[in-house]
Length: 213
Image (tube, rainbow, N blue to C red; front, side, top):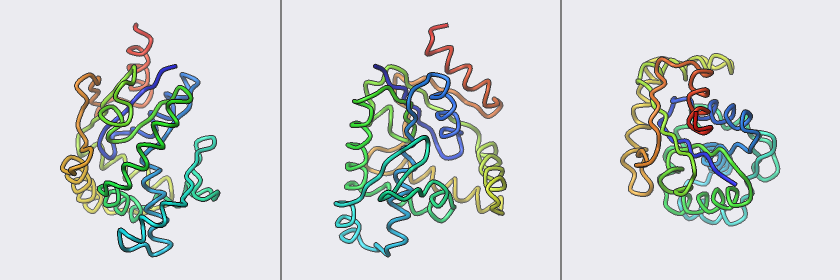
């Protein structure tokens, strides 16, 4: 049994690439960012505006995956968690130690039971430190902003390029400066700058490393 850990900043293509890579390898895909988004959605919908309220709510929360869809308390929230508002809230919530500790435990438990491709911001450094394969994806800020803009268009969401840029810059800062599990490249991770790579080339490059070609 083996795991593939993929880390990287917002807009580096982690989710799409991890999902396709898992399909190529015929193993499970786990989107850890979606877990934080699900908690952010719960906080918003239930007005959990203090740490104590959130802590209490997490005692009975149920987050599960089924065929690349994420379920929050048995409700499919895969589409509802993909708004910019939830993205920003998830970035803030991810800085809370008790949230990270709970989700890391869930993520490690999932990976202990089956081979997975898991992506996020602390997978290779914290969640799956012993993963057989580790990758750190990155791309220029312009590439990441354009990708996010196109993704939003595909979902029928109109975005302002400059607002997206400001949001990604802020998330980069939050992710790399938080005290608990900041975004850093694991020392044994393979760095891939995919600014000028399409999806197919990116995945093919990762498969070559995994297959030892």
